[in-house]
Image 1 (cartoon, rainbow, N blue to C red):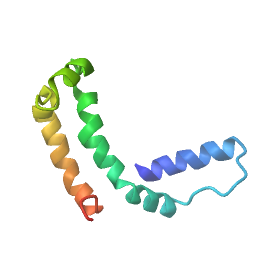
Image 2 (image 1 turned 90 degrees about the vertical axis):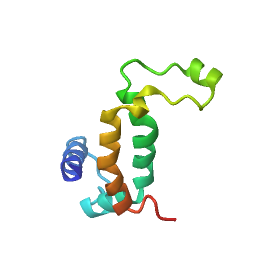
Image 3 (image 1 turned 60 degrees about the horizontal axis):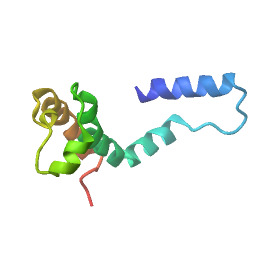
Amino acid sequence: MLQEYHTTLCDTLNAMGYSKKIITLDALRKDYDDKTIYGLFGACCILPLVLDDKGIEQESILEKGAGDIPEVLNGEFYKKALQRMLPEFDEKGAFTC
């Protein structure tokens, strides 16, 4: 998928007449791997909001505090998605200090 993104990026920049050096696929892969922690943040913090079809009311979270876990975090779909992603995050060094 990253290769497809890179191809589309290069084609688009060339079509727009971009004259500066365009990032290589290898450099993009390294940059992507170096930013794995952002993907982990998204998987743990953003993905539940995206998957929650009811929406999470910010006011109720602020009033109740963090003690009440939103339903979506206990959902099977979220758990399965996270279980598939965690080994990849680990492989990319997201849990290494």
